[in-house]
Structures are given as C-alpha cells and as structure tokens.
Image: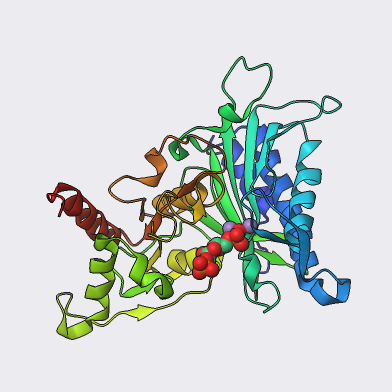
Length: 342
Ligand code: AHG
Ligand code: MN
Ligand code: MN
C-alpha cells in the first residue's frame, strides 16, 4: 500500500466531482453504510470478548435461527442509516417489513436493502462473513413508501457492494462504473483504495457449489458439474478445482479476485422455492458487482438482473462468475428447456 493511500471519502468525492458518476447524496449514503460496516467489523473482531457469539431464541422472517451478530449487525445498519437524510426506507433480510424513515428525520430519495450478516453459520468457527447491500432509487412522487416500491429489477440498482469480515475487512463497491475494493486500514481508521477496476477472468477451472445437494439438482447443473468432475479425461479436457466457504460474500470475493463460478441453484428439496439465496439482499447486489467486473450472473436461462421481483423476501437461483463458464451453463439450461419433456 502506498504511503499516501486514497481514502474511500476521497475516492467517492472524485466519482462525484470529476466523473459525475454519483450525486452528493448517494456519496454520503455510501459513506454512512461504510461507517456501519466498520462498526460491525469491530463487533465481529471482538466476538467472544464481547460475549456476542451464539444463537438467539428468535428466528427471522425466513424461519431461520438468528445469531446475536445477525441482530447486532442489523441494528447497527439501521441506526447508522436512518437519520442521514438520504433514504426514504430500508429493507433487511432480518426484518419482516420495510422500515420507512421515521418522520423525525428528513426523507431522502434512496432505498437501502441489506443482508446484515451473510454466512452467519460461520461466526463461531471464525471464518469470513460479511454484509451485502444494494441501493435503489425511489420513484418520483411517492408519498408513502411501501414494500412494492422496492420491487425493482436488479438492473435498476444505483449502487451495490459488500464488506467482508475476515483476515482483512474489505469493502467492494460498484456505482455502475466498474468495481473497486477498499481495505479497512486500522492506522488510517478508515477504508483505503486497494484495487481499481476489478475484472473477472473469462475462463476458469474452479467452481463453488454445495456438493452435498447434488442428488437434488436439475439436469443442466448436474451436467455442468459432472463434466467438471470428469476432468482432463472428460469433455472439458481439463481438471477443475473446488471451493465452498459457506459464506456467499467470501465465495463471491474469491470469484472477483481470481475467477471461478459460484452456484446455488434451484434444487428439489423445496421445489416451489426458486433457490436458497435471497433475490433482493444477495442475488441482485452480487449480480451487479459480477457483471460490472465483466462476469455473468444467471438464475437459469434468465439473467438475475432482469428478474422482476414479486415480493421482498423472495428467493432466487444464483449462478455467477466467469463469463465463458456461466454462458455454457446458460446454454445447458436453454437446451433443457427446448428438449421435449420426458
Ligand atoms: P445467511 O447467513 O445470510 O443466511 O446466508 C447464508 C447463505 C450464503 O452465505 C451461503 O452461500 C449459503 O447460505 C450456504 O448454504 P449451505 O449451508 O446450504 O451450504
Ligand atoms: Mn446471506
Ligand atoms: Mn444474513
């Protein structure tokens, strides 16, 4: 890192002033989200010393057990963002309903969505976890914000990012003009620019999927993975490597750094559910980041960013990463759709 690193604040101001990529209010909103991530990072680091590991008796709207840190991270993000004047409402994976900005604060023009703590099953084992966020613009002329105002396709996100809490605390951000990464520098007390214009290599020989679900997958996913597993002797003519952290933020961060694919497809365990991951808090922000880094993100034959959401907490199949591989997987889905039903 250089002696005179570019802080996140300075980088954002340049995006506003010199490049006209963002209005001032969006810049301030991103700074506020980053400040909240800093506080969450501190809580995660202190862990047992603060007595905040472990589960709560409560469950969230998805019926999943809540960890203490899920709730703490959600509260930190809510508290840090509601008073700033840039938001009209907030939606969180951990909140059943949207949180309109209370009348005592000024109301802004943006909607913020987040998964406060992604990978919460990894908290106790001290493996990388993170926060994922997405920013939408509220349509003009709305008096009372409703959940329906959040139901915009991912292609309309004005910003998206995540922050990983691991060996390093890293904020990865897109404002729709490429992807940059910032590292939390304890000496500086803030985020500093670490990587500009991240690009995902088009070709790869690494995949990430929870193999224990193999027997439940649909044919196109099974075909793709079978061919990878066949290695050099198979139709792909090369060996593949596999990784699965169990925290989407960490798995997607690896894909952004060195290529590969991350797959959480639909499966037969709950056939009426589109997938395990959540469209608005996980799939959409990650899809924007990946596409802004030159990769692709699909739910099957459809691009994730084109999905018209029907409800706030809906799920989606997620297949994203290196362009050539995801395009191949999309073709397998198209072929399966075109084939006559058996
Ligand atoms: P969350 O902790 O926000 O509920 O998300 C966990 C997600 C995602 O991070 C990860 O990729 C996936 O769940 C892991 O699922 P499996 O345990 O089925 O592998
Ligand atoms: Mn998650
Ligand atoms: Mn979560």
